[in-house]
Image 1 (cartoon, rainbow, N blue to C red):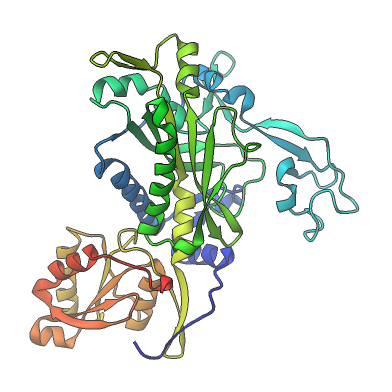
Image 2 (cartoon, helix red, strand yellow):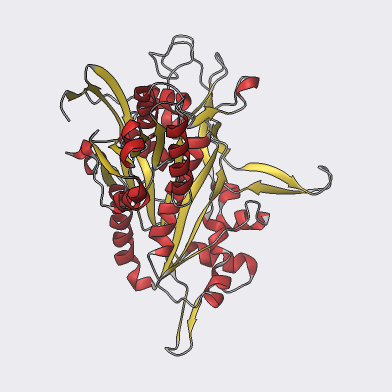
Amino acid sequence: MGNVSQMPDAVTMDKIVSLCRRRGFVFPSSEIYGGLGSAYDYGHYGVLLKANVKARWLEAMVQERDDIVALDSAIILHPQVWEASGHVTGFTDPMVDCRTCKKRFRADHLEESRCERKPSKRPGEGPECDLTEARQFNLMFETRVGALEESGSKAYLRPETAQGIFINFKNVAQLARRKPPFGIAQIGKSFRNEITPGNFLFRTREFEQMEMEFFVPPDEAERWYRYWIEERRAWYIRYGISESHLRVREHGAEELSHYSSGTSDIEYLFPIGWSELEGIANRGDFDLRAHSEASGTKLEWVDADAGERYVPHVIEPAGGVDRALLAFLVDAYDEEVVAERERTVLRLHPQLAPVKAAVLPLIAKSAPMVERARMLYEELRRVVAVEYDDGGQIGRRYRRQDEIGTPFALTIDEQTLEDDTVTIRDRDSLAQERIALAKAREHLQDRLAQPWRSPKTG
């Protein structure tokens, strides 16, 4: 379309936060009480976008494969689970306090932190800074299980979903009719009492994980580890992330967990810089052996026909729903000038977009247009997520839909009343065409099913 010019690529976290608030994707939690640090509530469009991210992950992990099954384990597990896994004693971060400003910081992240009183300085660099010695801080939230606090038993909100998968290995192996290599996938809430959460949705104390544990014969672990690195990187590209904004960083020996023989992060170029988007780890047989020893239940694979018995090794792709959603928002955010007016648009993949199409009567006070528009809306909403919008000038309604990432808009106008055609507008190209009203549902479904590539990738 003519008279369109791209604005400089300057996506900032402030712009993303502002858009999310303005269009109802995400709100600060408990806002009427002053808010709670790094806690957020998802509004209508955020809920829909988040649901689509999870649905696409489950499709890729379970629906499109024969070797992975789904699980939904409890958030509060037996406390011995966390003792066996090492979380009770080892799930810690080094913490320092500033005696002057009373703020706490991760001792290993001081380079990324800022002094409360002198934001241009790092903690410890200001003239008034007085940091304590570093001490270990356990990240698990404690709770009590029982009617009375004094008589109840101590338990924990899970800091990861993975342990719920490991303790169900025997159940799944027996009932799902799968043998290694096979995986168990789970999406669910996790909780970590982070010392320094921040950067909007990037690091919060309550978050949702997408984890899959892939159980393999020991001698195949390295091959599957490399396979899942590339498979997960390709998933983000498939749904619109620019390949130039992704990289794989392999952990050095000094970074590896004691049980890991290899860990790689898929990193994304967030406005805050390159940061982890998803981790893929070769966990070996540590988890199954640890739970076998602690519970007295053998968690191993036995193939009577082949005469094999072994403890599978585990490859773990682990990502966060909230962090993935943030990356998709950042990569989709675009600004351009159309006919001398600035336009903000979310170029989300149509399969992720919270609303697939908007139905708009050109004149809200025209009863015949409203009637036709409502009929089309009722027809479309049975098959896809659509929105009816008759508030304000048509240009403003287009801009509103652009900002929530709606790929298509169907406008009912005077010509519709004459020849039963409707205008369909493309979010990305701004191209408009007339189609038969009776074929609108079929046309929209065809357009949504077509391969899509972000215009931002060239």
